[in-house]
Image (cartoon, rainbow, N blue to C red; front, side):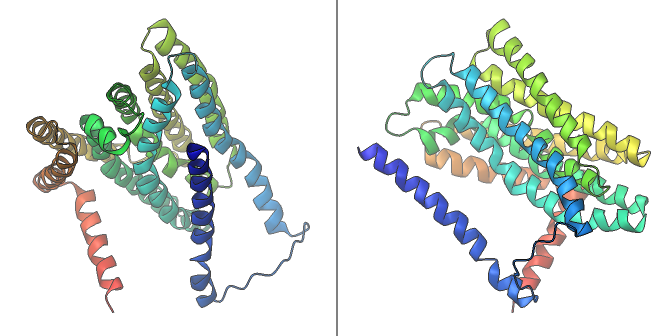
Length: 336
């Protein structure tokens, strides 16, 4: 069938994209002198150390997929299309996490690891705090934007063919529920690898496994007991993400004695205020352009970005200045 061939084509495209993502890095690796050699020595202490860390890390990562499976299982008990609504909303929620949370964690991990190796816990604490604050700075407004503009964004992306306006409305509700925990998810991407710098991959694993149990309980409560339906499953996921973030903060505080929580809360309050102003502007713009989906999304997002930037300048959000400085530096490095 046409649909079957389309699915096969998408699978092949994904495979080619993954291979290209690997191949595009090979020239850079060769320039820095890396040459692959098929050497595997099980007695090497470095390999053994990596394997000891790998087991708990894999289990912790598997817990996320188990939660996705559990959510889909619960969603299958609702009307037709419920699993699709949940998955479409989840993918949109994952976009800013992958774009910002993973990028920040990848950039911060070598630095925090070096601080731990030198025994400089003060610098580790400062670097980790700044990384979390930057994740909040990027993901809190992203969450607000997704929540406010959920309906037009989903209509533009998905409302074609058999994806009806009713499906758009349900998916929008799921996305709004997911948005509540988006910043928590992004912060977890930064916090969990910080434990690896201490050679501790078990604490994030235990927290992730605990999240599976909590997720099942909250799914039952919100989706069935309170009759929130499919959006209740998304809300449960957000609650689990925020709970995990708080738990990781508590365990990290025990490990390094204290965290720069005052700076985090001060920065977060400013970011929330700027995001609130942005949300009002985005909502007002959206209301004026209802029915013009593409124009609605483009102009509303543009207005939101301008208002958020102005609000950050007025509130003197440090992360805004840090981001501008990093962008200027990156632009200078790109220029020949």
